[in-house]
Image (cartoon, rainbow, N blue to C red; front, top):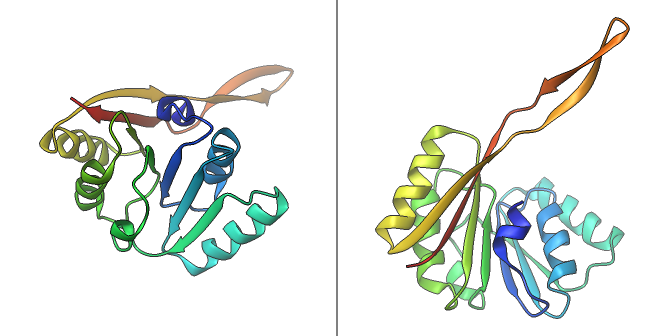
Length: 165
């Protein structure tokens, strides 16, 4: 859902902030096959996992940036899409920088699991002159119960999409 909301093209420049394992970066690099993806991550262990995953999936258009966002974002090329999967408490500052640097027609997509981050993201986008839309994604997996099967819900995720008004 988040990748679709970014509306990537083959030439997109993508920032994946709070890249974690690099899963979004890898998927984005496939869609933006002629573009560049910058995986921004603060945790040393996750940086190593991103290196392993980019090698495993042979993704050569991903640049790994070891930084706590918004640090180093000013040094990156202007993005056509930004994904924020983690903010380490810097959501408002990250959104301010991404709103200012985003190319015309670009989109910011934020995944949040708490009401507080949802509210902060929506408020920060609005403060920076962006429109936004929020959808909630819920997933349930089957689980055996005696001779029957039921669904067990996983935690829902809010997907906030922002674009210039």
